[in-house]
Image (cartoon, rainbow, N blue to C red; front, side, top):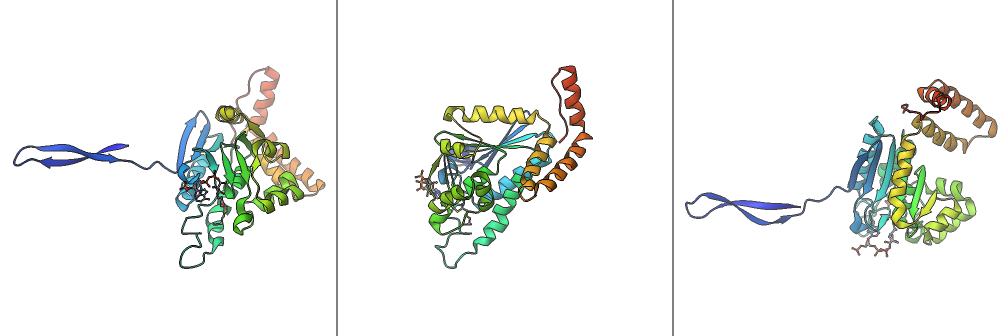
Length: 288
Ligand code: T3D
């Protein structure tokens, strides 16, 4: 918040500054902070439950690119401001809102924003921890599921809201949901669009852990710090291998594992990990 001022002069006297009001400087829709090697990004449109408009997409995309390019970042932590994690697409945004003069081509929003965002999250060169602080609906839910480790506050919930407004799950939902919980549950979630509490999401295997609300951010931070101290390159290769193995048979998965193990075996972190084990000291991993 800044005080706005105006310069005035009474008669022929000296010019004086006069306070004329308070101007609220809008906060960025994405807040960024860094603690050690953990980069935290916060979705910050709380009045609209952190739903996505074009500006928030662009800012998040830029921050993810920046984190990916920064050698000082070894883990990204993503969460939301206020009472929601993210309510998906901002349905009032003129890009998608059908309540205007012409029908909207929703494929544009998917191709321009959501698909690149999902690909960016799933290919980050560092692990991604998602702390779901409140409701995650539509694309907001599926973006959360793109994280490598997803924690949720016990009061949070997940809603595949798409069917309720005549759409299919996007942001990777059709790919992620059956892989995470199987076809029967994926269809149940997508067709009914019911609110799924965080505890139930954990039981189903949709997320890593549901935790007490007050513990969410401290635990997510601790988890992110722990991952940041681990061999980043190997963690990211593990994610990629598991994703790629979804469409491989066992023989090809074994071949892919051998290729990755060969690459990692020549890297610094493997030498360091084994040396540290032998010397009974803490390893210092640096590959990224
Ligand atoms: O369209 C395309 O481009 C294709 C891409 C689609 C991707 C998608 O994500 S489609 C799915 C879009 N999201 C939804 O359908 C969810 C809509 N929101 C809700 O169902 C509910 O808001 C929640 C279940 C998430 C939370 O309910 P509740 O009762 O806690 O809050 P509320 O009162 O409904 O919402 C609070 C405010 O946030 C309210 O504004 P107001 O009245 O206080 O000024 C509400 O309008 C606003 N809000 C919530 N979700 C959205 C939103 N504004 C714009 N877009 C939203 N998605």
